[in-house]
Length: 117
Image 1 (cartoon, rainbow, N blue to C red):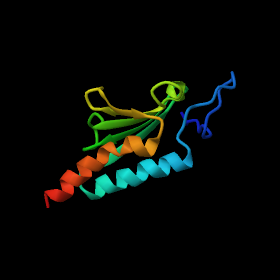
Image 2 (image 1 turned 180 degrees about the vertical axis):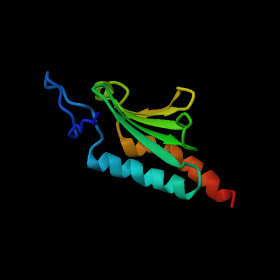
Image 3 (image 1 turned 120 degrees about the vertical axis):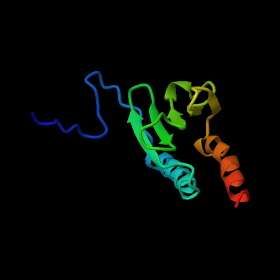
């Protein structure tokens, strides 16, 4: 039995597109991810895309539940903002219209990690 290779991004029959992060958004997320990996806080990540949301999950250790999920939900763009940072307990830690501002929540963690040295 062979695995089927699906082109990226996937288009469905009803012309709805899968929600994904664009290059700028992904660069922003990976930059913050790299800082926290260098600080020893994060070790792994996973990327999920569906018709509802794009999710970048970060892990402290491989094989556990995500420490944080960075979600992009375009349906919320006109309400609270399409970006949300969700903790491991499912609680929304930060929400906003600007990804860079939402990711600033992790600056406090980086500051605490560097002060401890």
